[in-house]
Amino acid sequence: MDYESLLLKTRDHISKLTSEQRGDYCFHNALHTNDVVEATEEMATHYQLNNQDRFIVICAAYFHDIGYLFGGAMDHEARGAACAEAFLKSEGVPANIINQVKGCIVATKMPQSPRNLLEQILCDADLFHLGGATFEERNKLMHQEAEQYNQAKIDKNDWREKTIRLMQQHQYHTDYAQHKLNEGKRINLEAQLKKQKKNQAKIEAEGDKLKKPERGIETMFRITSANSQRLSDMADNKSNILLTVNSIILSIIVAVLLKALDSNPHLIVPTVSLMACSVTTMVLAILATIPKIPNGHFTQEDVTNKTVNLLFFGNFYKTRYDEYQGAMNKAMDDKDFLYGMLTKDVYSQGVVLGRKYKLLRYAYAVFMLGLIFSVAAFCVAILIAK
Image 1: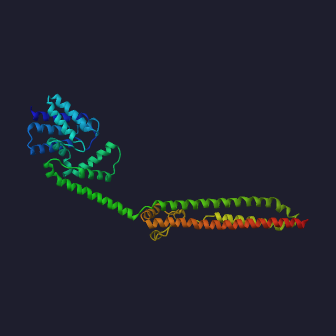
Image 2: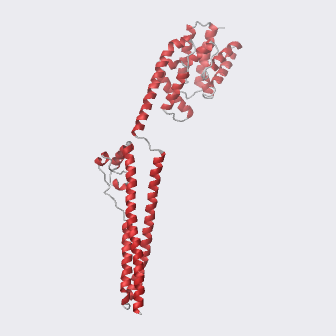
Image 3: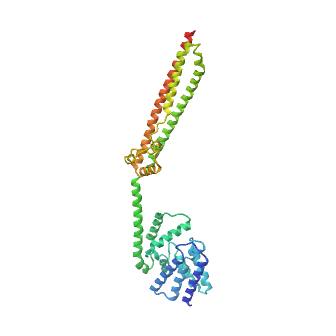
């Protein structure tokens, strides 16, 4: 059998299939196939294979990845073996040779499982690039192809970890590949490990720069802030109640009692007392709800000294966005600054609540005592008038 002519027919057949079945593969393409064929020929020459064995392993090299064009990466070896079988049968190749070609192709399935020298040669040729000078370039193409196949972005650090695991677990099977490629693979692996170590050091440095609060600390600030907001809402509601009730009382005083004072002079004292009580209560309730707003600016010195609370709108509402963003970025990069702002925000809320509830206490005390005094005064005035 003229194996050289058959190899030429094989090459032309693969070229035809590649042109007809266009696949979007940036790694498993004609370039990779040619690289594997060249590596296979190199090792076939080294081991001085006879014509039949040479044909078997080189033919398998041509077909080993053709299955990608007929269904993608999953089980592509089996489809490649089937394509090789169909072609070789049409060329009248004996069954024993066909089976050996198929055996070489199937052996390349990861993890590789070669059973003889021919299968070992193809397995080593398929991963020749792991120990070659073009490893970095070929690995990037492999990464790109994996993203296209999965239709999702794969983080380069995750891909690097997978590559490192592959290189650490992989072993060349032939003495020739071990002698020629092991050193190159070691260098390529060390380069990947160095990048991984550099990335881990970067992550650790960023983590040391700003360690995120633990769940307990986050819960503490969240609950404290929520409680403060709830207490503030309660204080505002109490102020509204006092304002509403005393507004009604004042309306009654103005509409009824003031008009009756000319004919009922004995009601002057209790009326004035009730009016003073209501007005004083309303003033205290209003003071409890009046907000205090700072000037809305902060200086670069405040940021440098970490004395400004960037979480309170009153400190930045008049500041330009780029200045505020720069200050916030600095705060988020500084654990002490960030925790300091959260602590200051909780403290400020407490101070405001203390002022509100103090004024409300005075307001309720004035309203209660004034109401009692006024009612008593009305009773006394009515008894005297009788």
